[in-house]
Length: 137
Image 1 (cartoon, helix red, strand yellow):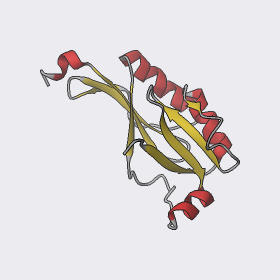
Image 2: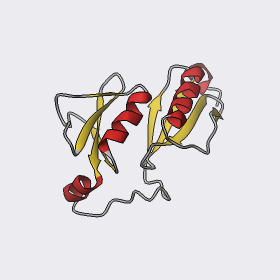
Image 3: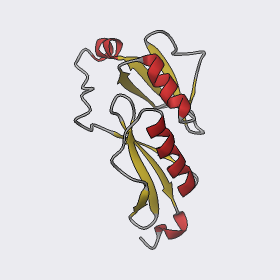
Image 4: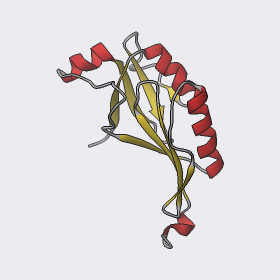
């Protein structure tokens, strides 16, 4: 395996692009972008997260996609460089139309994070890990 990418269904490509742009994410405008898709880039290694409108996603998987926001199939985690960055990302997600019932806070002694949902109910975990405290946990 040489690469890894994620594929997510969304209700509205343009609204999703605006949401993730407000959070500071970027998009590959050369590949994967069209009226039915967008190529979201994540992290320094530019992990690809393809956003497909719901009909296109269903066609690709030949199955239904559950965008009901009542379930969590996967938790997408991204790292933060500080507790402050976690707090800022959580605030940006809410301001951009996302939701959260999870306040930023300490987890297991060496982690600090916050879980939020994007416009389509996909759960994202922004996490800062203090490696100096990891052995103590």
